[in-house]
Each structure stands twice: as C-alpha cells, then as structure tokens.
Amino acid sequence: MKQALEVLTLKQARNLTGKTQTDIARAIGVCLATYRKYEENPGTMTISQARIFCREVGQPPERISFGL
Image (tube, rainbow, N blue to C red):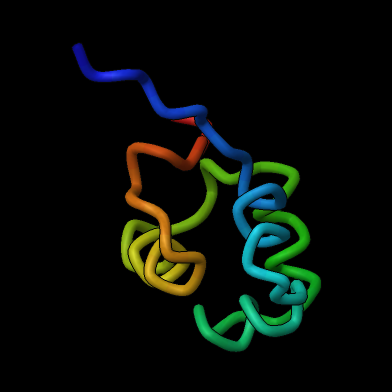
C-alpha cells in the first residue's frame, strides 16, 4: 500500500531547498513582493509559474498546496 505524501505549503517546500524568496521570485519571473503574496495566497499563481516552482523546489505538484 502506498503511503500518502505530506502536502507542503510553498514556504515549506522552498525552505526544504534552502532557497530564498528572492531565488524563487527570480526563477518564476516575478518581483519579490509578488512572490511573497503567492506564499500567502498560492491560488493566484499561474500554472506556468507553479510548474517552474515545482521544478525549482524538486517536488511534484501533487505534493504542493496551491490553494485549489
């Protein structure tokens, strides 16, 4: 039987990598203030940005809580 993976917030996933908010903001192509808003309300992130985020933090999308 497969064990369910813990779902992570954007902040938790980012912190696991040791990357800063600035690192992720640059990777997804937004300013720091916008990325900070995404951590508070991840449902506003575009699908494209979410894909890049997952790649940057090395987690599958189903492991990240995007507030959907």
